[in-house]
Amino acid sequence: MSPENFSAATATSKGSSIPKALTGIQGLDDILMGGFPQGRTTIINGVAGTGKTVMAMEFLYRGALAGEPGLFISFEERAEDIRINAAGMGIDIASLEEGGKFRVIHAELPLDTVNSGEFDTSGLLAMIEGHVGLIGAKRIVLDAIDVLMSIFGDPRREREEISILHNRLRDLGMTTILTVKVGPEGKMIYPFLDFMADCVLFLDQRLTGQVRTRRLSVLKYRGSDFLSNEHPYVFSPNGIVLLPVSSSALEQLSFRERVSSGHPKMDEILGGGYFRGSSILLAGPSGIGKTSLACIFAHAACNKGEKVLYVDFEVAQEALVGAMQSIGLDLRPALDADSQLRIRTAMPESMGIEDHLLRIINEMNLFSPHHLVVDAISACRRMGSERAAFDFLVRLMTECKSRGITCLYTNQIRNQENLTRLSGMGISSLVDTIIALEYFFEGQGLNRRMMVIKSRGSDHSSAFHQMAFTDQGLELSRIAGKARCTYDRDRRA
Amino acid sequence: MIKPECSQKVKTEYHLILFVAGDGANSRIARNNLDRLCELELAGRFTLKIVDVLKNFKAAVENNILVTPTLLVCKPEPGVIVIGNLNEHQKVRTALSLKADQP
Image 1 (tube, rainbow over the protein chains, first blue to last red):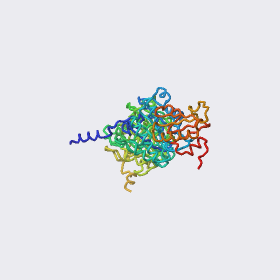
Image 2: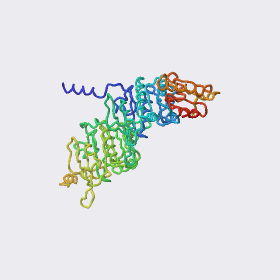
Image 3: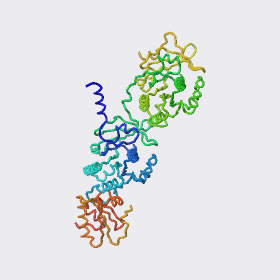
Image 4: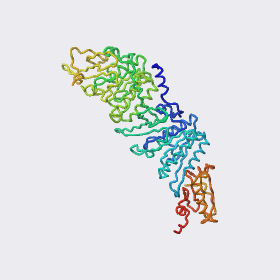
């Protein structure tokens, strides 16, 4: 067998051949490689507040819009509350119900009743079948099935009844979602449900630092591949948005095309400029000129007709534009009419990493920038925790890599920190080019110098260059003699 | 809780509706239990309506019948809902405000 044939065979065996019902939920169909199993049962497990109901509702809603009517049976919330909550997410159930494409039913459980012996859920089944027949439903959600089960108070009966329900819905060919509450530590109350279902999702939320993040993972999918890992998600005005974590996006692209750093001498030091689509880290102490180097790059790219998205976690747009004027850099023409340069400022602590990421990705979708500047990644720690900052950067990097966007990150570090601390967050190995900036004393004055620590796939100068910012811009000159390199010293230590 | 089926005016002392699912085991047992009780204790002072949810799902929806068998005791007021096959006689008697069986 030739290698070509072999790879073709593995490609077709990927994913699955079972029929699937598209969820229409952003990112979820990628994770599930096409959607929920059609005509089968999917379980959404999750602790309280993770959005099980919302996810199930959106699945039904998008299905109904696409021509598959849906039936939503709630064992917990009243139908009116469900309609109101959905409307808050931009989901208009009422008009779909009028059109006979949707139905919300509150299956109120008889709690204040006398129990006089064995019973079964034939009434519920009859009701479901009746409604399914009336609207021609193809999809059904049983929200909070755990509440229904609790009325039996006997594990054997619970199991029997749920099996009957499951089999009946399968016979009807319904694509079924059951939502199930799980205990605080992810403890399953009804483990047999997971054995029964063809697809099982788990929704989780945790608080890291001050910020809440929600994640989805697929626990099983009978007869199909899926993206493993935990996938973060957020509630947006357009419904749930998942950000699939895919390992394939980390595959290294080889860089060929160069893009100017914005300064001829800098390009020379770099061996011809940055690589298009690569990621670059500018690390150095406060005030050394990281933002200036980033803006020089952005300004030059805009002058060549390319688009730059500038994510600023530090200062307001006016302050940035003003500061750059002092080194002879006018960003205003590129900013006018948002055509070339877009600056987006945000307080890191204002939201969680998913929301930050979503905002940036939305902006990338709308603006299609060639390059992205993030100033400064050190601020990302304020999104919750070191771990959150790392996640944010890795996901942003993979997103940009897959789109071929050049990324320039600045990072504030203390002077003369060693090489391993340059990114501060363990991402040094992920970036392609690292430029270190530092202060040094010479004669009577404090000077600035820079050095390219690494640049993947490129020859570059490894000498220190002195930097000076004047109203004419940046001046770079090679430092004569054997300047002592603090980074080398730390590396040997 | 409003029970549309119960809203009609009935002169009798007991007004009962039993929801069953076809000829299922529990439905059959409930029917037998109720027939015997009515014959022995409520003769001449009750009305009984039996609704099969498999044939009349709308009635099940209107009365929110999720489990079968379900006995709605509409009268005497304020009414009570008894679920299950009515095998636990004492509970049924209490629900119908009948005095307890002699031991």
